[in-house]
Length: 426
Image 1 (tube, rainbow, N blue to C red):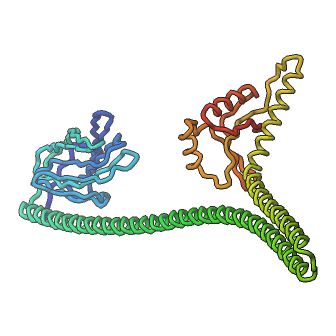
Image 2 (image 1 turned 135 degrees about the vertical axis):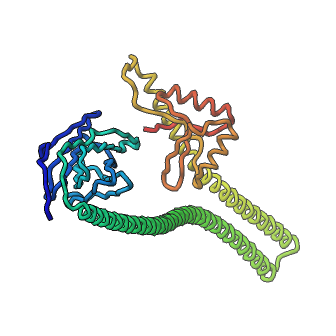
């Protein structure tokens, strides 16, 4: 087919640039392999921080748009618009959009270009410099063949467009399915986390219950030891009482034996002695007096043993208190003697501390001491204790000198706390 081709009136390389708010756009136009076909490459830079973007070319339908093999961006041809979508701007902030256009007609052309982008959830729109091309007419002898070529190109472009739409739809479905799977996985992970959390809480509750049970067992064991100690002391006291009773019983039996012996002797004497009535009466009187005297002595012995038993019990109960009072008295005497013998004041600060002991308990409890303090108007915060052997010594106050300790003791005496005495606490 005969064709007459005129010479192109513009250079094959045409650059146009636009600057807006740091964004730079450049159009690079070059001739393609076929007559009237050109490759347009738009380079946009300065898009650092931009999330997504879209560029729209206003190309009338009489001009044929062709997809460039160097462009993988999703695009759409809608009436007189060709739109390219950039779903992810690279960190460099530079994107390239390339397309092929087969021009129709003999006039010069100008394609406006619009650029829209989103940055920090804010949409912005700017107009890039239009694409301008001036050329001499291209004479095609066979107009019908030209129209056929244009139709084929349009059909091919529409097929590509449909294919792109199908791919986009498939990608959307895949994305939705992926999102659904991710939500399902997140739900399963959350259920697993809640389940694990429940197991951990149950395990923690079991451990806490076991700890409480162990503490309760230790408390009961301590109470059992205290009770066994108390029972042992009571048993010891009971054995001592039984020993005293046994001793009294032995004394009584000895007295009865003496009485019985004397009675037998008296009977024997009555049988053997053939004394006169006066002598017999005198002997009986003497025997009765002697028996009465022995009976009196036995009774006095039993009374003394009973009194001795009571005295031992009183001494045992007062033994610890007397010992502690003696220690307190000795301490007071010693400290007072030191103060009287001192001829010059000691300017050094004393490190000896004093307190007043008010109780010595074998069965100690904080509640018991608190009740005692409430009854006598004492401060529980002034209470200190020390365990010695089987007893817990309860002290009140803290003094840095003996005089202060005496003042504390005098206040306690005024509160009807008798038997209180001063002790060293260091």
